[in-house]
Image 1 (spheres, rainbow, N blue to C red):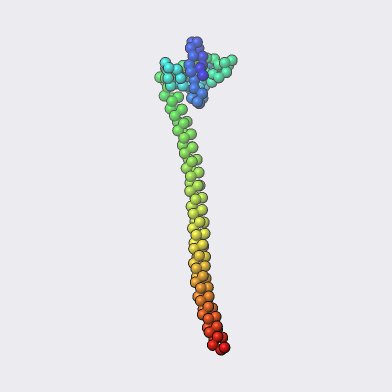
Image 2 (cartoon, helix red, strand yellow; image 1 turned 90 degrees about the horizontal axis):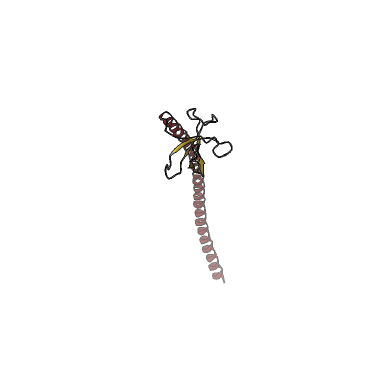
Length: 159
């Protein structure tokens, strides 16, 4: 996309969100509105930042204000620092939210691990109990078998 500037030249402007509203009172367009900082996409000035009218998308409202960032040494650092600070603050907020989510996830995983360990311990105890019952039943079956054999021996000897 390109934007016409006051001198009749066109400057390519990316649609990838490369414009930002500038809240500083340093640079204003002919509407007395804070300019947006955009990034040039031309071969002559690739990635060079410039100030433009905030209505640049609306050809009827656009006042065609244009000025390269940094042409008046007094405004370059302020805008760049302000934009960098805003980006860093947003990045910090995102990182804090992410850290908080991870902390909650870690707590949930820890609680689930405790629950799984409790179930494991209960199943292990139940398994031991069942093993004991199986051994006891084997002994009882063996004893019953021996008793049955003895009863048969006695019955057969009485005949």
